[in-house]
Amino acid sequence: MKIFLICSKSFYDKIPPIKEKLEKMGYETILPNSYDMPDSESVYRGTKDHAEWKAEMLRLSERKMSSVDAVLVLNYDKNGIQNYLGGATFLEMYDAFRLGKRIFMMNDIPEGMLKDEIIGLSPIVINGQLNQLDAIQKGEVKHFKLVRDNIADIIKAKGEKPVTRTLSDAEYRVQLEKKLLEECRELIQCTTPDKRLEESSDILEVLITLGALDNFSLEDMELMRDVKRNVRGGFSKKLFLEKVITNIF
Image 1 (cartoon, rainbow, N blue to C red):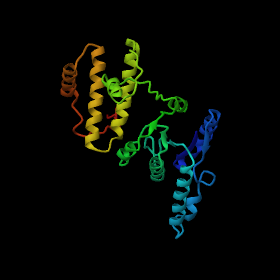
Image 2 (image 1 turned 90 degrees about the vertical axis):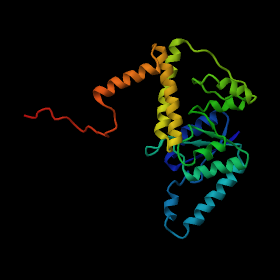
Image 3 (image 1 turned 180 degrees about the horizontal axis):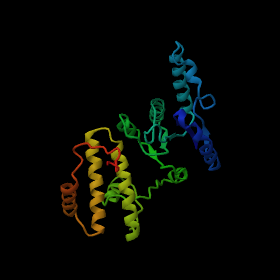
Image 4 (image 1 turned 120 degrees about the vertical axis):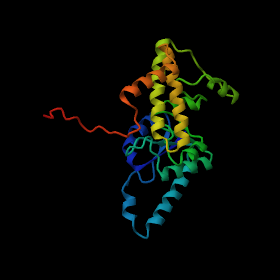
């Protein structure tokens, strides 16, 4: 399989070990357009030739896309944005979709205005595990995570076969804690009230399940919330504690 690596120039330093591993796995790799000259756009930016240079890069991407079997999107954290994916990379993903190429993403789909469009491209997220590519080639997509109770039935209804197991009590708590962290990260990245509501409900579901492990309920949490709020207050006053001066005499 021939794979076109696409990403922001900020992630070019991550390409060499990925390229090396993929080639050891038997894959052929194609590098991003300006990989050998990452600062080339800065030469044209602000000049009359910039638009033509950009257009030629897009045409070059399309020619490369026509010759490969798949693209691997390298999306990592950038400037506080988790799993960053820029406009040019999105356009390359769209080209891959239009040409019927498989789209793999190194990390999960980022929050933002293009999230729904990216979902529509049906990318396969490998969660940093390049070995997943071999499994996918064999018709397997590995997840190794706790899922909601009806997910297996939903997968079966799509004509696919889920492979599951029942966790031990100790594993169950660990996976619930991981799920809580995952959902909190997703909430922080949300950009609309509807998405924040959805992710908040996911967090609540995990909290209720975790509470049940220690024999307390949502009602018990609400009671404790009232106790703490009566003594210490809530967060409605937007108070931000900068420091405490102890020597005031």
